[in-house]
Amino acid sequence: MKAWEDALAGQTGDSLKKFEQAQKLAVASGFEYMGSSQVAELPIQELLARVEAIEAGAANTNVMADAVLGGVERPKIKVSEALEMYWDLTKLDIQNKNSDQVRCWKNPRKKAVNNFILVCGDKPIDEITQDDMYDFRDWWEVRVLDEGLTGQTANKDFIHFRKVLKTVNAKKRLQITLPNEKISLPESDPKERPPFSDAWIKTRLLAPGALDGLNDQARAIFKIMMNTGLRLIEIASLTPEEICLDDAKEGGISYVQILPIGRELKSRRAKRRVPLLGVSLEAMRAFPEGFSRYRNRSASLSVTLNKYLRENDLKETPDHVVYSLRHRFEDRMLKANMDERIRRDLMGHSLKREKYGKGADLEDIVKVMLPYVIE
Image (cartoon, rainbow, N blue to C red; front, side, top):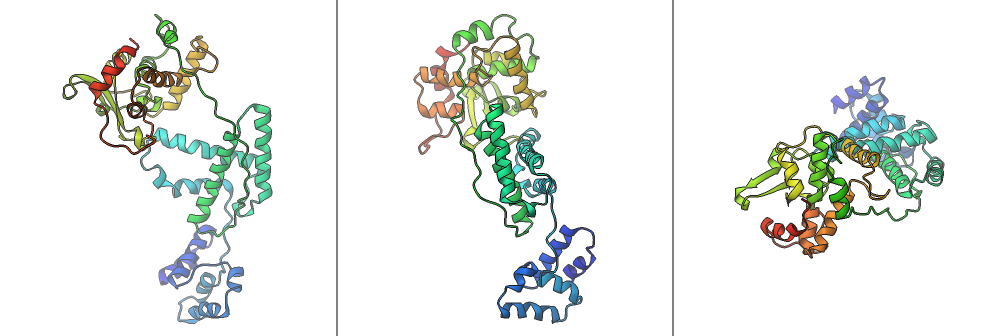
């Protein structure tokens, strides 16, 4: 206990550290740390117990009094400072993510905090009021109406911002009463992206020279998506261990297996094996070690591909995007009358019932898919 007393006595400049030391000393003395106003409202017996602890031979009675009677003020932590604390407090959440995934995870949280600061200022988090949250909502309402943004986008900002505050408040034991009244905006149905037609894929996307303006890795990834329906991040993150070409154990079938190697998968169901066929197999053969250029830069890959489609008149309609290839792959499986379990396994989607057994063999999947493969 003396260590906590000495540490608290030595804290002069850093209000957060002093507050934390007071909390630890209070707990070591058998009490929950409370602010002075809370202590004043305690039943007389509990208050006397705290006073007696101060007088029970403590080396530094002033320090002990600060700890058990709430003499250390809660630190003033600005919103921007709370965000920096949040990164340290959520290391467990990102322990299995690679650098690209961590960046994608951090960005919306940074955006939410920066947007709040833009509207309400970088104020201490214990001074944030419900009116501030209303102002934040009103600012988003204007953007949704004027800029064509969605309620979903605004609500994600609200969720991320509140999560930052709640996490810092809880893990630093600040005991702040945060505004919690609902401020979400109405959400519309998400825009469905149409699939590319097979005719468009064959006559436009795979026309001679159509993709020559792409760098070789982006072009290969685009083609791999055509017959696998894999997510861009899954293809970009492939390691040599996940790329299985002409596997003798599988009767010479080539496939990729999506594994949590150096990254976190989207879900438990994302771990799977997908055969490589047609133009996708040809593209994968050129990169048996994977795609070093995009391994931790899947977001830039998406920007590159969508920009190329747009600038080279390769969008079947204005609503088509790169992921329209993934949607077409799913439609192709439906056309092949493929079992729902197999379809969901290949797409990495959850099954809406209990999963039994290991699923279909690669050989059986290939037989069903072959008539619909893009060559």
